[in-house]
Image 1 (cartoon, rainbow, N blue to C red):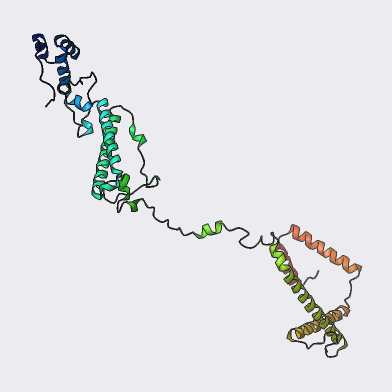
Image 2 (image 1 turned 60 degrees about the vertical axis):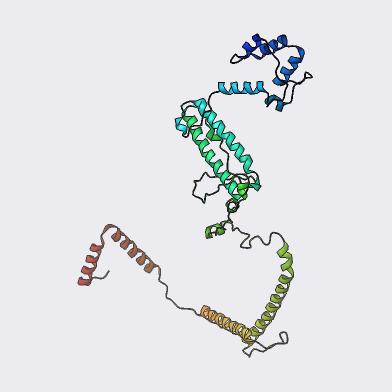
Amino acid sequence: DLKCTPAPAISPRLAVFLLLPSPPLPCLFLLLSSSLVSSDRCAWEGCLGFRSGGTMARNEEKAQSMLNRFISMKNEEKRKPKERRPYLASECRDLSDADRWRGEILREIGVKVSEIQNEGLGEHRLRDLNDEINKLLRERVHWERRIIELGGPNYLRNTAKMTDLDGNIVDVPNPSGRGPGYRYFGAAKKLPGVRELFEKPPEMRKRRTRYDIYKRIDASYYGFRDDEDGILEKLEAPAQEEMRAQVLAEWQRMDAIRREARKGVKSGDLVSVGPVVGEILYEGEEEVVEEERRKEREREEKRKEQEFVVHVPLPDEKEIERMVLEKKKMELLTKYTSEDFLEEQTEAKAMLNVQQ
């Protein structure tokens, strides 16, 4: 398929060199330059991927050249066969291999996370990608645990948290039964039924107990500090003055009634309303008059009792001395004799009819 001029005749030395399994390129170019004429050299340069003007061809042309394809084939033969990642992490015995497989899983996760950011993939494709990412995450955890068992670093300490659309860390329950570690990425967070998982439930208002209610109550609640700001005092001052005036007027009126009642009681006449009062006595005022009459009668009775004198005969000096002597005798008998002895002595005196 190469579009170049037919290869010119070459020397036997060059033909033998080309039959080698892997001829060195510098030697090949040296032989070409020494054994070919200028026109033949240009033809071979076209076959090997060079332009006639001495400049390199495009990358596509170089990749399609016979020499480049030959070199690529040789490199693939030297390369080891591609290894597959073990199905179980416990099958790996080498720490470096385990770390390499973990890095490969992280690269696969990064590719799929970048792909799942596209919202135009469709719901089914997004769900499949999210499942694949979660599967790789679980596999990564297995390899990280295996690395710890083999004596490597602990990657589990720096595990990323689950976040919502606003970037806030959330703890999303798993309704699908896939375990508590199931996570959502990219556009999968906006799928139907998934957005509701990230919405915070409304906080239920906790009913306060009686203890909580009384714990915040102080003297202000009971009105003990209402007079401190001075507002209530200004509002109550006019009403207080009015009430004082009413009470004072009522007291003056009742005092006038009492004076009229005292005058009537002392004179013994009927109580009449004087010109000072000028009003008819009501039921409460009549009670005041009766109270004044009762107090006046009590004062008269006390005065009469104080004037009554009782004539009591007073003892003379001999009688007083005899009573003092008898009292001292009784004290001595009580001090040095028992009560039983005193009772027996009293009975004996009564039987003998002996008088002291």
